[in-house]
Image 1 (cartoon, rainbow, N blue to C red):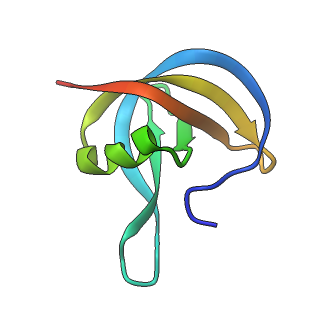
Image 2: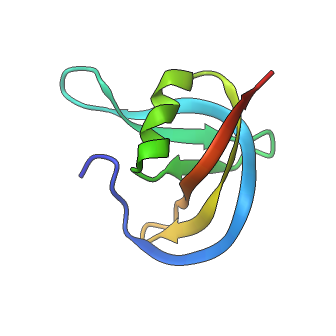
Amino acid sequence: RKWEFLMIKYTQHSDVTGIIIPNNWDENGRVVQLAIYTNKEDVYLVEHSRQGKELLDHINKRVVVKGEIGEGIDGNKLIVVDNYSVGP
């Protein structure tokens, strides 16, 4: 179940700017899920992908993520990362 979500729909291709924050950990304390917290108080769970995993190196940093925005079956906002940049 780590890093995998069921999307019920993609809503748009968009940019999301925010801070990368750990959202879930395994039994050994390793981060298994990331989220992007925006300044508008939106939270986007990061979908498991190569680019999504690369964001593990940028926890607590500000990023601009480009990708497909979707909604999970539980109503959470999700993003499938196409590319990203780390910013000030």
